[in-house]
Length: 246
Image (tube, rainbow, N blue to C red; front, side, top):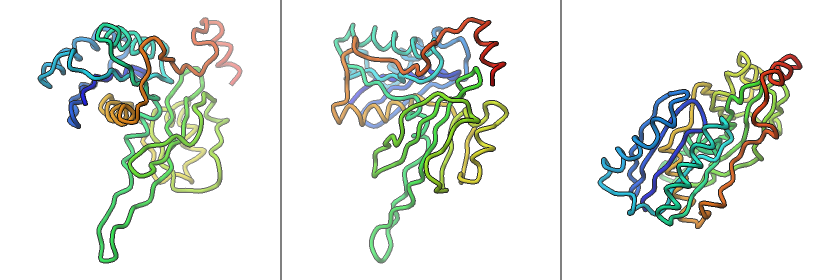
């Protein structure tokens, strides 16, 4: 299995090549430089991996939610390469890519057999700007990361975590947004929060490889971005009005 992965939905630009379980990645926090870096990095990683584009089985991309221009860039790059090679795309949620940084429960062997550690529920949150965050909840079930809620865009002060259980793990810049409102409100239910985490293409590639094995590919022309906002291009005056209403 060989695939090329584009993760450009946040301020981090990240590209990865997956070859039969081995992953090579380039990652840099590079606001407004994604278009400049993505393709040269991709070509460099392919050379490093010792393969050419024609050997790729699929192209993976982070479909959002995230920055409008970053999501569009990943789709455009992935579509262009996939169409040229007649290969499928494997779109993956940016929130799932972020949540996959939380490792699955460890399996330990003891006298009574194997024990599986606790699968902590995960809240992934990305700073959506304009006083909002993108959110999604996940949990590891065996070796698969599964979504347990729909993706949403919401003000941090309005977000309500389902149930009343503790033991959550939080990951993503949404926990630092708005002076850390989300983290402050939910801290009693979390065992750990990483408010600086950004999605990595290496994690995207691994998720995409698993999805490919399950047959979860789409034709290049059918990929759909996840913007979540109805209006992804607010004017400056509209942005000011929205912030003033918070």
